[in-house]
Length: 462
Image (tube, rainbow, N blue to C red; front, top):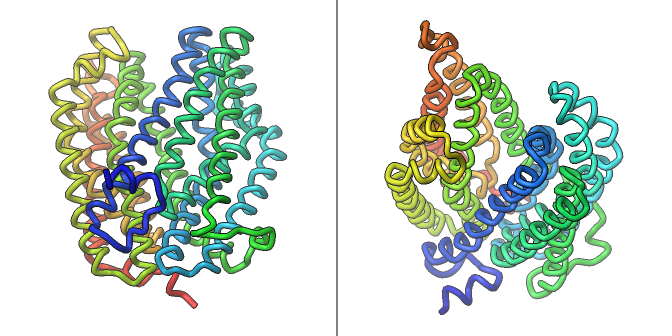
């Protein structure tokens, strides 16, 4: 009962058992990540079932462009979350108020810039991506609506990050579930009743995200016992702005690296033919759910470490890291077992084509052990980010993605070419990914043990 009650309030992670802190914070976060994954999946199902493959492709093709547009907000959100958790742990109310106020204003400024510039760059970007003619117009319509309504999406991501930094992972979950339900209803209304195709999905997303953003802001304004915001606190503080950018920029660059590497590897995937492309899409959808616990514990560790570093409780950080990594590894092992046992059933949820199912099961077996490695990587990266060290995880991502994964994928494909496989073995895509994950775990563990992250606390700066 106490565990459930704790999830509803702001959590001070500088007191109590670290294991209980992490579990109470991570459970709502995990459910929220699951809801977010379902949120994205429903959009694809609706357009795919009620409009057709072209609309489905339009939403999918828009993904890389949308991710690039959101990188700025991802950076602000990461920087805000770290600062908020550290100042909250250090009980520095004035700095906490300045940080949150500055974040809210920076988000508005960034959103207005993208709203003004976005409509002029959408079409050139879609042309640059060589978007097929039957998809082009719907993809442009989809992105135009998303760009015009991007402030709502931005504020939800930023303010939910602030709430998590304050130890409240339950409210963002509730508001996300509200957005998910609303999004599903609006998807069906706009796509089926109004026949708006991909544009209807975009409009549903914008409206749902805007409402969830308003709910997050109202929750933040009501937390007067934790932080008191005023009009004066919304005036951007130069020092806080610099700190947010310094902490958030590496995370934004990390996401950019992942996006660009995915585009490069996608070109290799396309060369293997339709069945391999379909298999890769299905495997990545399963991967999205399989990775959720790892990302969840990474985010939980960031908040836990941030609060305790801010409070100067390094003894709790050590205990929390041990408990967090242990929980993450246990769940990863269970997931690997489920993938090995039920791989065929998972694949058949997405496709009934036997060749694609068998290939997908084979690929998931290649990746299985990698999820255990990623449990270590995400947990320890979360520790370093929470302490204020966002540079080290960025460099590790750069090394494992650009230096290891991409060259390995193309290298293995080249070395396995034959008469039967003129472009090489499709296994190259996932073997390279597995090796990059394992190397990421090794490098992250080394960086964690070196301990430079311990001296990166922003709350301790004068």
